[in-house]
Length: 217
Ligand SMILES: Nc1ncnc2c1ncn2[C@@H]1O[C@H](COP(=O)(O)OP(=O)(O)OP(=O)(O)O)[C@@H](O)[C@H]1O
Image (cartoon, rainbow, N blue to C red; front, side, top):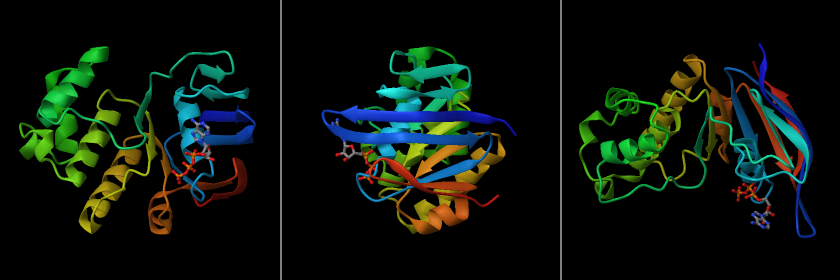
């Protein structure tokens, strides 16, 4: 299998602080890749760099055909993202929120939005205001937003945050289904069990450095 993402000597310095320190990683297509590490290790910053939301100080990240380096402003199109809590407009329904977001790129139809809502189990709540969604429903809507335009890479920073036990089980099942549909998922988590159940590989960061890499399958 090919690697859909290659991180080469990626370094990020803010002020006098080294946030990412010469990171070299490759992420194989169609797998779930875990990123672990204590608070402040650099997980979110690495994910933001891969999405093109943060520019590297040196090194580069190849995402499909796009090369992200200290000079590029490109944002890879094929990436769906959950970083921090997904923000929605609470006064509008789940469907309207997705329609609004889909309207930015205008790539998908209402039917495709409805299909994404069905996959995450929100068909029954599609017309309910997001203000009345539970935390788990918002997380599901966040996931729908991340993959509804058929993005092949999903970057998910602690998507289980705030979910109850059932919500976590449902989210795990969804992530495995998305993997089975060919997506590549990068998942930051503080939960050992999520990593054990979901991930094919895991990388551990500490102080912006890779301190351990494992491949399970
Ligand atoms: N805008 C910023 N300016 C300067 N330093 C920052 C900025 N954002 C984050 N940092 C620092 O970068 C380091 C890595 O932060 P990051 O958010 O990637 O950690 P994390 O591994 O995701 O942690 P957590 O588990 O708490 O989410 C931390 O030391 C943090 O203080």
